[in-house]
Image 1 (spheres, rainbow, N blue to C red):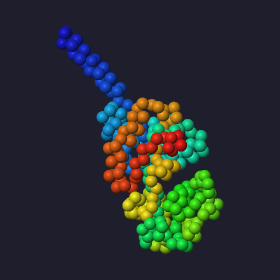
Image 2 (image 1 turned 90 degrees about the vertical axis):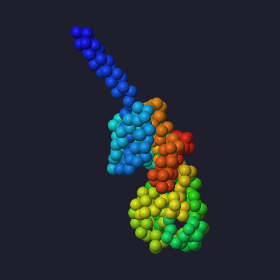
Image 3 (image 1 turned 30 degrees about the vertical axis):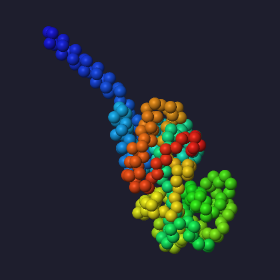
Amino acid sequence: MKKSILLTFILVLSAVLASCGGGSEETVKVGISGTDTSTWDFVAEKAAEEGINIEIISFNDYVQPNTALADGELDINSFQTVAYFDEFIEERDLDLAPIATTYLAPMGLYSDSLAAPEEIPDGGKIALPNDVSNQGRALMLLEDAGLITLVDNYDGLGSISDSVVENPRNIELVETAPAQIPRALGDVDAGVINNGIARDAGYNPVEDSIYHEDETATDYVNIIASRSEDTDDETLQRVAELFQEEDTKQFIEEEHEGSLIPAFLPLEEIGW
């Protein structure tokens, strides 16, 4: 009888302890775009040591990670630049907000024959993307490189003729389908290529470009976003802190061989 009572007590105690232990672990669902989970896998390992289970959910577009977050299917997402995010939530009227910055996937200026932007000759040709979002970003890169001047308070939109107010070298800006620019480099003096296409073409955006964006291109820094009501959530804030630790920075630099630039900036610097 005593053994039976003791056994029952042990079973009940074990169940209570197991229940308490299970309840201490929190799950955070993170939405990303694409299949490269390496950095979030690294962060997830650190989070697991603190009882935070990070579940990574991959999408194959740039729409669903935001709509799924707004609908409560995710806790955070991490896949987009602040410029894209700002435009998306305004168009869709979504109550989302960034909680941290992550890295910059730099757009670069590439050339088969030149080593620096200042070597581009008068009347030279530069291929740049023909889609609106990438073209505006490319024009800002060329302005930053000292090749052109844009209208005051340029918003990344507008045609080339309406946006460029000074072109002292009379450079011909050749609008080209983004994916075609790497193959077109033999026909122009230089070309502006976005990060993903450059990497697919075998370029390292930092090492192989003759000029590229850095952390000062704050509109194009990537972010971690949550629902606005959850921006102060302690668990989500802790996940953001784990992402921005020094060892994560080192992992990004080594894993991506410099093609992604860690950019752990205050939210105020990206307009939030």
